[in-house]
Image (tube, rainbow, N blue to C red; front, side, top):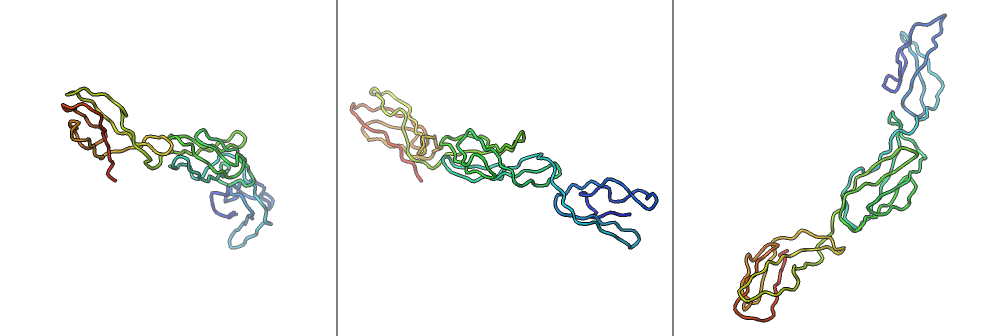
Length: 220
């Protein structure tokens, strides 16, 4: 007899020989849910009563999304799903959420709201049930440019001497931001600077003494 449904969820799909008109055997079903088994032979068929197949034990946990890039200090909702070794989803499980690169709320449940730390980094978010752990990889990137600092902020340069100055940009949390293409300017009596653009410049003092300022303007 041929058994159905004809799919990898049912094994075997063909019985062995009958004994005294009866076949006794074991059928493995790997697809959870309500189903029935039909047997057919030369155009004749019979179907069992419907029955429910439960999922197997928890085998893996999948977090959605499993990988994401977020801004520092932002929030994002993650969800977890559990599956048996045949790919059937298990309902009714509450997972324990943990991370070292932010906070989670709630800490137990099928979902959590992740709040990122204010430091750029790469880390993981985990969802655990018993000994099974699911992972999500999170990359935290800095935000928008908030301010620029010239290093050194104060310096004494002798007449005819020189000093290198560097411009560094930061976001509102103090994380360094990439900047380039800005323009350096000084008061004309102070001397000269070269190059006039970029993150770094070399100041050469002129022949006059006094207090002056070196400015860096980022061209947006």
